[in-house]
Image (cartoon, rainbow, N blue to C red):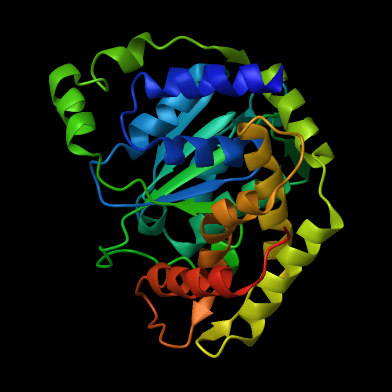
Length: 311
């Protein structure tokens, strides 16, 4: 049942998103693991199309938040408005109250608004005055930022990067895929016609299945070996935390489901290690405001090559 669901979602998204299939699989990993995904890439490579395609593939609510320096937390979370008839304050939900939320250019809004958004991501709830409002499942934030533009931006600190299960980049499409984009312009045609192939209830059921994916002790030890190596590596100032270890474990279980298995193999860990861990580490050569993911990804590549995996 879950394998059929994944195939339907993958095929439907691929009808309008012509980039590499690994990006689609990683986005599905984030969805199944109940995590949030940061897409860090240059403008115009399909970030919005990919997010919208996933949302339209599920019979659920989608919202897009264009994050700007003047955006307030209440613009994202919602606001309480006084009702003259009842003489009470009524809460008007903001765009965060959706199943799939695209937070465009997250590093363009102030730390205060970033924190409000990321608190909702971590707790899956919104607090207003004395009330707490749960966010409906499935709930997933897909945030974007440009890694090469720093003027007028507010750099995400490490503890906020840590709220994202995965950080991925889409890259440029190959020549044939780009030819298809030019000929069909899917964002203007096919995207609006995309129909749901799954319900929200089916997604929640698949999410609840992920923690039950078999995880042998040898796989757990393999993950712990990788994590331990990041904490002692001479090129790293900050290694992977316990939350990071939990993230790569959940991502590996979800990746196994995406691949049609109910058990994790070492290759699952290797496939998700860099997207799940690189943004949680800080290299000793890191300069505040610069992109550190490239250097930490290189270190992780070395670690994955040197740490022995279970046979």
